[in-house]
Image (cartoon, rainbow, N blue to C red; front, side, top):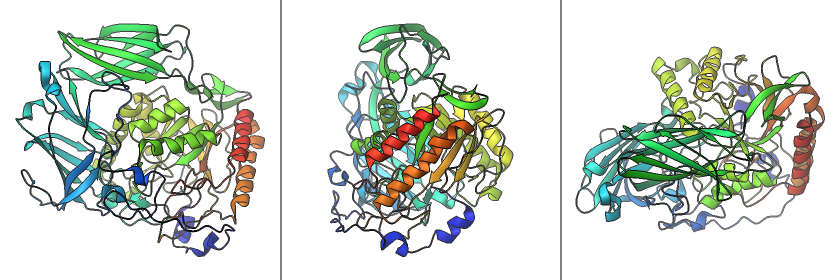
Amino acid sequence: MTCSTKTRRSIAWMGMTVAMGLIPMAMAAPARSAVWNGKVAPLATPWTAEVSPNNALPEYPRPQLARPSLEHPQWMSLNGLWQYAASDVHGALPFGQTLKDRVLVPYPIESVLSGVQKHSDFMFYRRLVDVPASFTAHGQHVRLNFGAVAQDAIVYVNGKQVARHVGGYTSFGADITQVLRQGPQEIVVAVHAPVDGANVMVGKQRLKPEGIFYTAASGIWQSVWLEPVPATNLAQLTFTPARSLDAFTVTSKLHGNNENATLHVTAYAGGKPVGEASGAAGKPLQLAIAHPRLWSPQNPFLYTFKATLVQGDQRDNVTSYAGLRTIGVKKVDGLNRIVLNGKTTFLLATLDQGYWPDGIYTAPTDAALKFDIQKTKDLGFNTIRKHIKVEPARWYYWADRIGLMVWQDMPALPTGSNDKLSDADKARFRADVTAIVEQLKGETSIIGWIPFNEGWGQWSIPAAAELATQIKQLDPSRLVDARSGANCCDTKGDPHAGDVYDIHDYQGPGLPSPDATRASMDGEHGGLTLGIPGHMWPNTPINPYGDVKDNAALNKGYVANTAVLRDKGPAIGVSGSVYTQITDVEGEHNGLFTYDRKIEKVDEAKVRAINEATIRAGGQR
């Protein structure tokens, strides 16, 4: 959630008196829950008690590149208890040493689920692993994979460095075959996590959380796993729909030597083959689809793809998926509007920040990860703005399957740093943007990219235009909103770039007009505040944007707010909106759900009715 700098400063320290005495709900505070090691969760979710060292996110973490299939993957999860030690910059590498503490991977160290519940700028993880004999049989190699580690990670296996990765939001891995030895393998991960102490992508994380900024999430925060692979193997498969909506362009990236390697891909619909393509690995393939079925929120149909990489007598078999859909801007009734599959579509979204009171950046379970997306759909929205955070691959998998379009923000640099950014800081940000786009551009649900929010970390007005151009070159198939909130708050100004003109208006909604080249949207509005006793992050001042006295007032306020979009938006040409927000987050109590996801604050039927009416009104032209 965001607002003007002046307003933000004036409300950040307002006390718990706002709204607290105005809630006519007699609710006993729920008992606080102990987690796997006896620590007490400051605010438990319905899934907190399900987490233990034996079942820490056990699902296969990479649905778009499953070997050989998502139903029967060959892999070994390394989620669970690792040895752990906080360190400092001069800490010696702990090879052969048992570390005194334990951490539950993949929950960030600040979270109660990690078992640490304390930040450290420097830390070590250590684990001994027995690699199954089948992983190295028949000349196979072994890859060690990390979903994400914040911020700077160096990985050692048996005392040898196998990987160095800088960037807290992208995946990485290494072929560790050459350093394997007899007996258990020692894995050590050294991490530096400066959070907002450095000019790196951090989104809403802060070492001293307050107001609209929240608890940091450091260290390993996405799944870790091993898998057997051929010496040359598929690193990525991307399926880009043709503008004609009857084919995909298939692009692939490989680990290893691609000499004389070929790729064969077959598309399936309902278990029946509907298209295939073959060619040199690493080169684009054109895969025509017989009797194409399109993906949309109303019908989120996904094709299954089986791909085989062949090099000599080695074969790498993987399974993937994608939906057939296009997104663009087209002039309709004289105004630029967003079109999905060529049809005018109003993108009615919630702001989704992806924070959890028990796991901070990491959902406690896969069911929890799915919950926010499913409830967004149940409430009648068709879009999510994923706010200044990148999620694990399974989050996008659920968005793809459930059928929500996604505006994908780039995680922001720390606020207040715009005039302090060095050339190296800017180059690092551009490189991180490229890495995120490259990692996520196969996700069907993502329909647009947002490089900057309210000018945070935006060193100049032209910088937004430069990043928009950079992203368009990487991914011309999607929209780019060069700067969400052109009217607010840092480095104010319209870059006159990208596909969308976007303003923020609390409570709003804003009704910006499209211009000669761009569609328009309200990138943030709403923010109606209602705290529910017993379901709030403890010892945190409320950050109110527009308090309401009870659930009935929240329902009335939401319906009235959205009705403006329904009644006035279509004629003006507004193509989308983002209501703030789907859940409370720490000191923000403006969610449609409480932070613990235990209370739905609104009447789902009433919200769904006005949302569906607004989408219909915005899509009738």
